[in-house]
Image 1 (cartoon, rainbow, N blue to C red):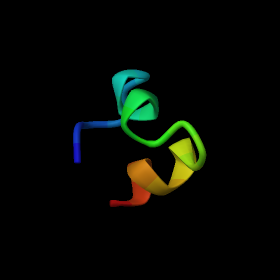
Image 2 (tube, one colour; image 1 turned 45 degrees about the horizontal axis):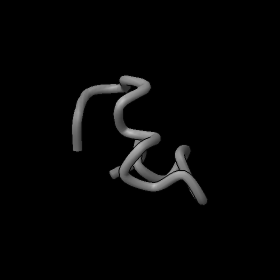
Image 3 (cartoon, rainbow, N blue to C red; image 1 turned 45 degrees about the vertical axis):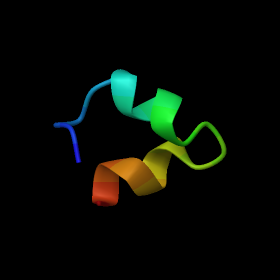
Length: 22
């Protein structure tokens, strides 16, 4: 949900790209 930031990867290390879509 966070803007395209590296922090989003921490939420889903398995699928960091999916977090960006959400």
